[in-house]
Image 1 (cartoon, rainbow, N blue to C red):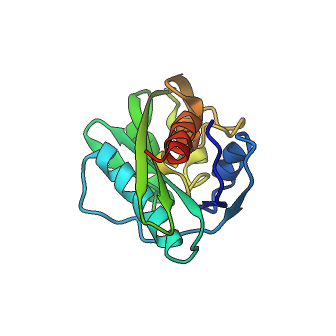
Image 2 (image 1 turned 120 degrees about the vertical axis):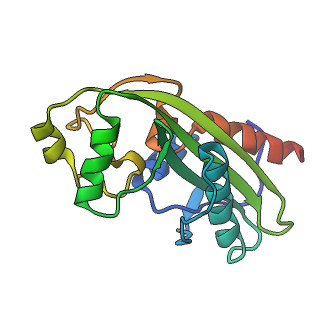
Length: 191
């Protein structure tokens, strides 16, 4: 990986993103963006990229002299965008929609140079198969992961919902490290 000379800031309070970013061995600070995640965009790839960039830019305005990394994950199943559930009932509906089906998980990552405003971004994609679970199990899981797109957490060992992943596991968790490495190399090379 190229050498990044400015402080790195993660524009997220997600413990999963923090844990994954530590795997790169780079020092970083956490400054949550707290920007709204609403958008008129319905294309999941473009939406993930847009929200990641929005988060990184919001923090970059407050942190001169830094590189800011933003990320956002969206789930797409059978023509429907599935974000974070607004309540237990919606979580149950989302899990029912995903139950036994393949779906796509898109995570956008954006890196913003706070001084120049220059931005680099990528969107990673993984295909994910949810295990078919009985209604009682879906009821038990509903509401457990209210802060996650798709209302599930693949990293939760007590959550039996996901059967198979095609693509990067860390993308489904919420921070595709291969994309982050590529963006950091591009910044280091000035491209």
